[in-house]
Image 1 (tube, rainbow, N blue to C red):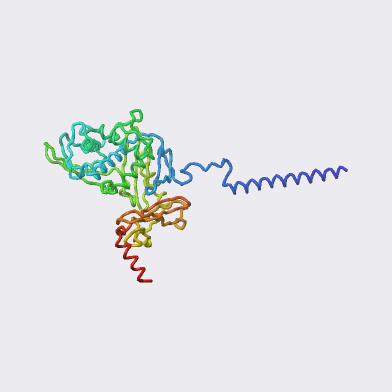
Image 2: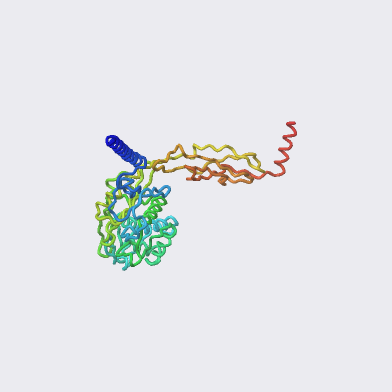
Length: 415
């Protein structure tokens, strides 16, 4: 009897061990299926872990300039002291003034007492000294000159105060909701004074500058240059050296601007383009100058390794003649107005891009060459990613009585 009880106990023990072992195996398989590991609560972790990019700077962001998509972010909306990357907005308004024909590159800009009094990074403009707009842009872009920035602000708007107001208006227009400017150069700024920005906002104004005015790279990629001071003291040469070290080492670099103060630490907005892919990497409050360049380069590397450009030339898209109502001709020839370009990132594939030719339900004469009669719509994963207009490539006059009589007569003769 005792022997029988021992046998039952032994069998129960074995069954218990088997069940425990089965549960362990089940948990291991579940962990493998879900990607979890011991100590992992299922959280995907920080962006830095996902991308393999380690950022020591307080804030950083990487955007793809074609669409504005964010590819990496760390504290992207945190309001920080921007230092001289403030001048990205100053440069944007300068190029906007050039585009609007308000100023020209050949205009002579006089330096006021106030502009000449700026400290920090400067080219030592003297009161009354004049330089062309072209030279002032060099000084701002290459040497981060505070005096040149103020001189240009005064030249465009009459005063730095008025210019700063335009800077804030432009910031609002671009959707920079975590930005407020108090000066045009970032000198002696502080959050308490009301001068601040965020990594994402800096990326927004950087993107606007390099995409709308790509000629900025003619200045921002110059390593060394010089200007000529002509004052009452005589004529002297002054050397300019770019504060952006990546322009000597990084393939495809197009700019853009560095900034540093004791409060801001080390900031940098880096723009680059390769194979049709355009990126902006912003690093703010990095611990040292080398780190800001290394981290910006690492972000750009990540972007270029995960993005490719897909394009289609307008000349390759054939639009068949479209029916015209009440015209002297029954149909009209049409053409696509521009090339299609899209940056594919991550798992996106060009094979999944759909193209639809959308023509107006009715095209009534008269039609002028250049009139928009439809669109080429590009769709990826059910979302519209671009729309390129289709225009008439010829004039079609409205048919009159003579035209209708000729058509009637022709039909009668054919009968």
